Length: 206
Image (cartoon, rainbow, N blue to C red):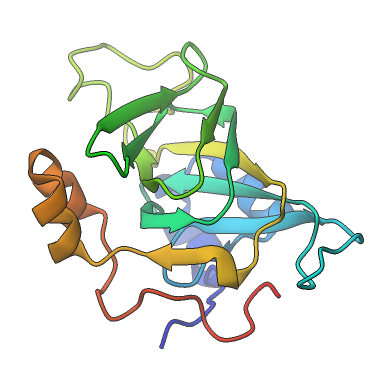
């Protein structure tokens, strides 16, 4: 069963400081990120509409998320019942990988010199992670990269209307996805959760 875990306080001890940039530490301490069950992203809920739909779900929700090298934070493949709007705020670029019902695939980059906003349609399998390090991409540096040896991060937001609840989430079974999207086998293998964990814990974000 997936559990919701908080970032360990030990990551902020002096012996760990050299691995995490000053800005990343500031963001972690300010927003108190938690680990999203099943999907794995560091996140914090920032808004949940008081207005509700007929099924009791919120009219809208918003969250902040952060991809990092350390502690590792990615989004494993999942799909949602409603559209999701992504917003890039700061840090190094991030990549979204999209698998459409008609068999198409798409890779989208959000970043300071790339897209700042993108809508993932309902029902599309999606996953995300930090873009490859500058040296892997053949560049000297990203515009806002951290110092050598420091963990990279990307701060982003996701907004949904209707809002997010655990009922609207489904994680992918990697074997099935690899069969349907053979050109994305490596990415699917990297960004997939345990195939037994396809749903959020009972009552999560209800």
